Each structure stands twice: as structure tokens, then as C-alpha cells.
Image 1 (spheres, rainbow, N blue to C red):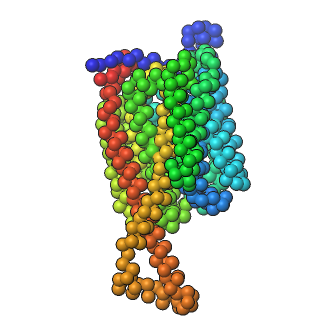
Image 2 (cartoon, helix red, strand yellow):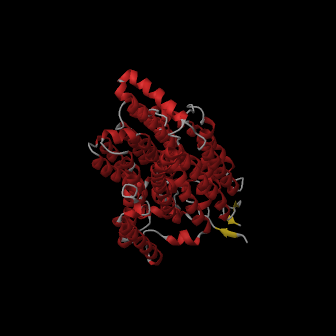
Length: 546
């Protein structure tokens, strides 16, 4: 049964007849001249590109941050998760702030806060100060993605929203894969601190372009925001804060083996249930969950973007770490090796932007997730003897597949929403993607540590320590090290060298496990794609679901 949905399209800078009479034709022409949707799109996308790029740049610099600030690799991952959770707190509230203060003014304020916080991230003398600055930076950057996405979707008619999302994809998909290369170059050539300083000139350009080209649409200019949902915001901060603490400290304190963590999980569950109940029943909630549960396509899109957040952040964070931790690459070399994924996305985004309104997007999504899963399986075939170009083709194809995933998800999830619903919807949409990313990074970090211990014990148990081969290799290594270090130190050095090889093999297999689990998530998401209702665009601009 087909459902016809009216899709009012309010391009940025739309002018009412009453405004035309009051301001004169010259002013109207001038406003229309600066409201070219592509210029507006580039201005909005620049802020998103800066915000997402920073996450990817930080991921490749984690080992250097840990060494510089006397922290472990596990503690260094808090730099990523604290940022994503701070994002999550602000994302749902972005629509209210946009209505209260004006979307353009609020967007500029967020860019300024993000840029200033970037400076303090680079200048941080300790891990605690860095995490505090990252929280402020995440709060400033939290609204950039939903605001930019809402501006883009409103600037184009529904039939061309695929092209708009393709451009938005350059910020959300290309930035994470270009970030490791830029971050590696800055880290190796200068310092990890420049991975944050690089945001300062980009933020200045973004503020300049947004000030000049972005305009608030009429419903924003004339809207009156209701009272702020204090209860909803407090519950949101409570459950997202508990989630951050659990993700950051869970592995360190043996997860549910710690009493305090079980209490934290209980508080998380209770506050999350209360948040959902309050948001559903309140007259003017911070997050309007009715859109999520009553619009089937938007609900399915949120579920899929949550799974995509897990998969893409695991891949972005783990693959450079594999090259650095297992193969001993520098940050720059690891960034260069994974950079071709950005080339794949650049090739795929224009293609999907052109064909997205001509082809059933469910096929594009299913194919994109399937190819992503296959590439994750190819990543799991790695060994200690691979060259920098061994995974070149899977890396490029992964980037190409991601463009066929992100654009159709965003287009189908928002196709049946009105412009007035767009701000709240994009906040929820990006909230779930960031939470998925936080959970994915924490799961991957935990899996790497625990599976490494498991594989190390299995390798040690299977080694024929009393066999002839083992004794011969041990004797040869002892003689080799004995000539260099002395006879007494030869045997301990030989055993230490053999143990290091066991550790490398165990670490390798832990990465293999994570890549395989990522493939399973991608394949599961590919099957869920068919929960979407098919979308067709009518000639009168309306949208029909089947």
C-alpha cells in the first residue's frame, strides 16, 4: 500500500511576499544570489569536515599521545570516547538551541568553541587537561553535524537530496579516511599537538563562509522555542555520562567483575528508560521520539546508522593501529597505507549522488554493506609478512562501499520528514551514529586486549617445548645472542626474543578476530536494509512510500 507524504521544501533564504514588499526587490535579489544551494552546502560541509577530521587525526596519534603524557594505550583511547560522548550530549539539544538563538548564530558559536578548544587540546600538559579540553571540544562540535545536515537537506528538493548527502558524505566519510594520513604526517614531522592546531585555520575559514552565505529559513527566523527540557537534558547527561565511564574504565577494571561498574550499568539502564519515558510523554521534549518510533523509515535508518557507526569507527581506529602496533610502521606510514580508502570514497560519492534517485536505494545499501563485509574478511587474512600494498585494493573498495552506505541511509531516513522535523531528526540520527562509534571503539579495544591474552596462551600451550625443533632453535638463538651479549645472557635473550614473536603472533590474531566480527556486523546490517519501505519521488515533489 502506497503512502503519499507531502514534502515542503524550504530552501535556505526563502523569501515571503510580505518580506519582499517590506524590504524591496533589490534586497530579495541579493539574498537569492548568496543562497545558491551549492555554496551553502560547501559552507555547511566545511564545519562538518573539520569536526569529523579531528576524530580521525586523533586516532592515528594515540600511541604518541600515550607516550608523551605517560598514559597507556587503553587510557589514550579516552581521547576518542570522551569526545564522542560529549558529542552525544549536545546532539539532541542542537535543535532547541537553533530555534532559541537562530541556527546560523548557534552554528557559528559552535565552530568558535570547537576551534578554541582545539588550541587547548594541543597545549594540554597532561592527560587530564587533554580529556577536559576534548569534552569541551566535543560539546562544541556536537551540533555541527546535525546543523550542517539539516541545512543541506533543506537547501535541496527531495529529489536532489541524494546529491546533497553525497557532498555531506565528503565530510563524514572522506574525512575519517584522510585523517590518518594528515595526522601521521603532522605527528611524525612536528608533534601530535599539531593534529589539533590544524583546526584553527579551518575554523576561521568556516566561520567566515557561514557568516556570509548561510541564512536561516523562515520557520527558524519566526520560530519561538519552548521552555528548555531540563529533566530530559539531565537524564541525557546522566545516561551518556555513565556510558562514557563504563566504556573508558570497563576493560581496566574487568567489566562486571567490579562492583562500581555494575552500579554504573544499573544507573545507565534506569536513566535511559526514564529518558525514553519522559521524552515520549512530555509536551515539548528535548528529543521528540515520536519521529523515531512512528516513522518507519527514520527508525530503520537510525538502527542502521548505529551499526554503521560501530563498523566504520572500528575500521578507522583499528587498521592504522594494526600497522603501527603489529608491523611497527610510523604514524605517517600507517596513514599513507590507509589513505587510499579516501580515494575510494571520492570515486563513489559522485556516482551514488547521481544514481541515488534513479535506483531503489535498498539495493545500493545492501550492496554497500555486503562489499564492506567482504573487505573486512579480506583484512582478516593479514599476516606478519604483508607489504604496505597488500591490502591496497580492499582499502580502496572499502571507501567506495562506504559511500554507497552513508548516502542512501541518510536519504531514505529523512525522505518522509518535513523541514520542521529535520533539525530534531538529524540530532537523533547523528547521536546514534556517535554512540555506535563509541561502543565500537570500546568493544574493539577490549577484544584486542582479551583476545591477545587468549591467543598467547593457546600458542604457548601448543608450542613443543620438549621437541627437537624447539630445542634446536633455542640453542641457535642462545649462541647468536651469546656472541653479542656474553654466554650467561645468551639463553635469557633468546627466550625473550622467542616470547616477543609469540606476542606478535597473538596480537595479530586479536586483530584478525576484530576484523571478522566487523564483517558479521556489516552482513547483519545488509540484511536489515530490507526493513526500509521503498521510496519514490513524484513529479510534483511529493514522496511516496511502498
